View (tube, rainbow, N blue to C red):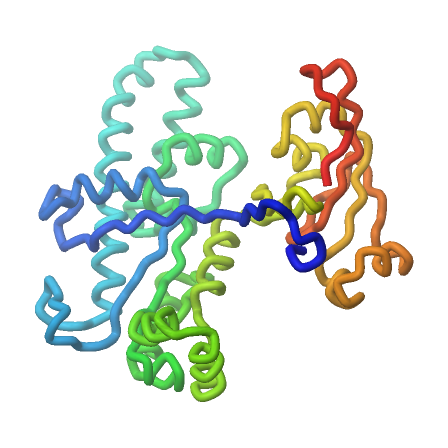
Length: 328
């Protein structure tokens, strides 16, 4: 899109990642800086869980040895124990009032939901693997338990293992994830390889890709993070600006327009939409895309697709004094 429009401004999509130090065994009880680290995790929407598979004399390990499966178990247990302590305290704090009828039916219903959460965690099942109805999901979203957060496991390997994808550690991690974290996305990468790639110029990067047969894992890591958060993006483009806008999966066209300005949602009429795939297949020629009938006008019920390129047709007359009637 930048090649097509040569805009004055380019604004990419952003995924904010907070680096939180690893937890030690007993963190849920305050060991190390456990309480501070767990509070940091609570403030996040999802978790990149980084584990190391190699020994390095310059990189010490709190347990004195390298064992990625043990590290996965330690972190997951600390998260679960923290949630368990919290839900137990909530249930006990509310029990007497509920038994006395304080708060009526709503308080009783909430208490039943809290007891269900407690039972889930006491069975050592992370909340994200429990079965919840709509009301329970709403409560869980409000309470922000640690084990409710989606995880993406990032496996930091040596450069050799990243290139060959052959390692006993990778197999052990896969077996653990299949058993304990089904459906969890796992991505092997190598800080060692990525650092050399980052430091290389364009020719050097191309040479590394050709010689090793791999590319940087970071674009895949970022896109997987987006997917873990149920996020996607659409593009608006023109000579002034090319911009990626972040929305939740399942967002309809009027609400997508509202991410640009609330008046665009109120005044939404239609949206002219085509995919980047269509643009690429037509040699980045927007006119050819339209001539081929690949740009379609969509209405209020259109569910936005990841990577849509959009021209919103809106009527903002009488709304906040806006003059522009569209956004491309």
